[in-house]
Image (tube, rainbow, N blue to C red; front, side, top):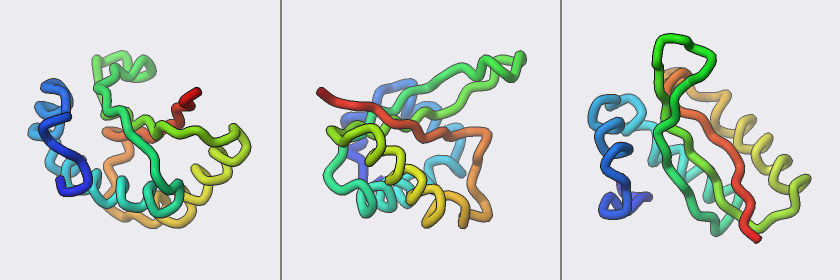
Length: 104
C-alpha cells in the first residue's frame, strides 16, 4: 500500500483489508487517481455497516478530505468517477465507497 502509510491505518481497517484482498489491491490505485484529480488531499478510512443490506454487510468508506468549495469538490468527484471508477472491471463496488469530507 505505497500510497497510504500502513502505520496510520486503524486496526479495524487493516483487518478488513486483510480479509478483502480485492479491496486492498484496488485501494492504492484509487488513491493515486484521486490525488491526480483532487491534488493534495487527505483521507479518512473507516469500516461502515451497510444499513441497506439488512445482513450486517460492511464496506470500506474512503472519505476524501479537502478544503474545496462544494461545487468544485462535486465536479472533481464526478471527474474521478468518469476517469477512473467507471472504467474498473474488477472494482469491488459492494465493498468500498468514496465520499467527500470538507475541512474548514
